[in-house]
Amino acid sequence: MNEANPGVVKAVIPAAGLGTRFLPATKATPKEMLPVVDKPAIQYVVEEAVAAGLDDVLLVTGRNKRALEDHFDRNYELEHALSRKGDDQRLSMVRESADLATVHYVRQGDPRGLGHAVLSAAAHVGDEPFAVLLGDDLIDPRDPLLARMVEVQKALGGSVVALMEVPAAQIHLYGCAAVETTADDDVVLITGLVEKPAPGEAPSSYAVIGRYVLDPAVFDVLRRTAPGRGGEIQLTDALEELALDPSLGGPVHGVVFRGRRYDTGDRGDYLRAIVRLACEREDLGPDFRAWLRDWVRDEL
Ligand code: UTP
Image (cartoon, rainbow, N blue to C red; front, side, top):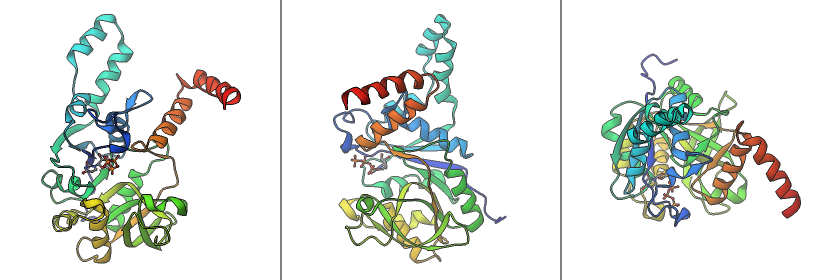
């Protein structure tokens, strides 16, 4: 344990992207507000941050920030109506999202990429290591990842990135890491990073997924990071600079995640997330599973 390391207390959740893969649903609604069963995706992500001990949450929002702000605020009219009806169960559900964490907001302005979204958190974060959780990336709460990343950061310093092994045919959809093994089975040292490599140019099958614990040195690097792939300021490019020169902000390690994860910004994965989580719910699952079984048997 590194006693000089104050540990991670703040979480930054970028939610200012345009969500073009999900149009027209995302024309007036952030994709992070799309429901996964009966909760918006972003609430699962805030719950995950809180479960890992990070209850200071900064949401990076864009043009449709209103729905996000309202979701994490009180709704007195609704609470009053539910309390008049004596519907205590729904009342506590409505209050829950407002009481989850201390939620702050910063506006990204132009969505110039994930790196740019993270840079807009600099003033709030200050000079401490912090977590970044992508607002459209769901990690199943039964497969905790962030707490392990925080632990690894505390022990090894520097920055920690979540990695997942993906089939070779899919690696061009992700940032990809060149790695060296360490004494820990689930921890690797990252020696290079490339954003969405062309087929055949990927240094490994390790894809970067939407969880990071970052040294604040990343802000200085982002300030001088030029737009990269797609004309966007890429977080991957800044992380590659950190990985190549550990004198900037310590080493960059990867924690290899082997659990369940859903990219709710992708329509196929979004549908899979809903079906899977609905099947597993105690209240909805039994009926839904029975219907699904019949439907698959009779119609597919
Ligand atoms: P994505 O690349 O998945 O978001 O970014 P996007 O650009 O909205 O998606 P498509 O490709 O157009 O459908 C991952 C996360 O980073 C946030 C997004 O909101 C998402 O949570 N993001 C991305 C920002 O906050 N700002 C940006 O400029 C870009």
